[in-house]
Image (cartoon, rainbow, N blue to C red; front, side, top):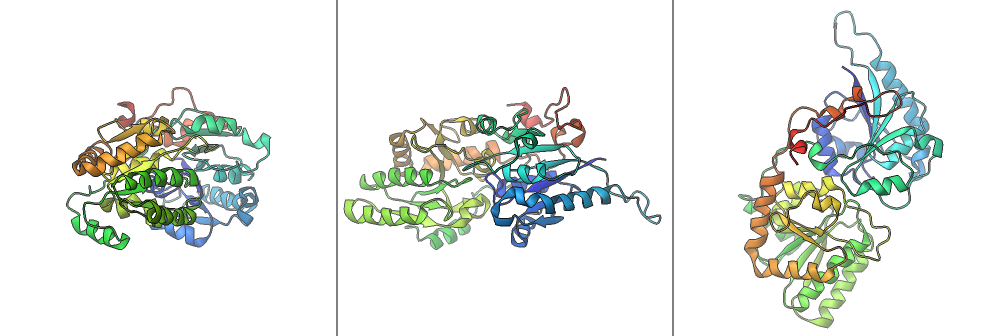
Amino acid sequence: MSRTVHVLDPAAPGCGMALCDALAILQEDDPLVILGGRDQAERVRQRSVGVDANVPIPLGIPRLASPPLERVLKRMIAEAGGLAPEDQPGSAPGPIDQVMAWSESALVATLGADHGLPVVGQIAAISGRPPWLEPWRRHRACVHPIGPEIGPLLARRGWRLSEARSAADFPMQDLKHRCGRAADRALIRGQWGTRGSEELVVALSADPPTSAAVSTLLIAAATAGVAGRGMTVIADPASGEAMAASKWLVSVNERRGGEPVHLVLDERVCDPRLVAPAVDVVVAVDRSDATPYPPVSVLALRAWLACGVPLVASNRGNAASLVEDGVDGRLIPPEDRNALIQVLMRMIDEPSLAADMGNAAAARHGRGLTSGRPDWFRGRHYDLTGQPSAGMESANAIAASR
């Protein structure tokens, strides 16, 4: 059976815990190379993903990682082509027939290496300026956007696109819903300093993290606080201007009165499985002057829903592909901060609303495909140019039903 070499940059947008959990199921006996240091490789291993090698990124420039990555890939290809020992017939690994890169940085490093294999990209999120790569190399990859929003942005960056993947094309590990985990909820909320078990706790989904999302949510939360509805907001410390936003919120609480709004910076918010029992709702919003607006990874959004946390998001492609408005979350008009304020205030006034939506989210998204690999994941569906073969369709029954 043919195999695929995976190249993963854990620090890249869209390559967070949700993707690692999917790879833990999809990988099987495929080798995987981490772009980054040993500490990043160890964090990926902790998600039950097998890591065969790691290649540092000099100066944070993916193109400079191509020469060492080329040596690693050639070694893997040579080992895969070796013969099995006489005393262990059939133990030789299968041949490697493609390289699958899971971010723009991984694509650039892989395409800059001369290894002779077709390159396939699976991209869930981007941010900032695209990493530099010679244009003639860029067209050698076949790139699949993950989610409906990311495709146009990748096309503008010069990537040759194939069909998009949906979140349902990726398996998920079975997760326990937050019900019955009152002890975890009380413990985590105590660490955050939450006032009472009924205070609304709002997490900011940040993959990739942006300062625009932090400021938009905090302004909405502060407005609700002035109206007498306090809450606690949980954000990733890596989000842009997070510390400045925290200082601004303190000054707002002192000047305007009303119910205080607390901002807690906790990197665990990047892993819904760690904090979902203590979170009432997750928010993914944008604003009009955030240019370019980087879509949040659809896999990261689904991870929150699968953990039983309802999603309040701008009505854009990724969120709309997951959420049924009013059932497992709310879809609000893009750039409409007033709509976000109204949703948050209603959830404070009606505590059962978030709980009911959370139950619906767990029921709709928390039952993932836990065995087998979809047909699109197998290397034989690509020819030597990286083009998808005719008639290639997803074998994921969940995806086919949506």
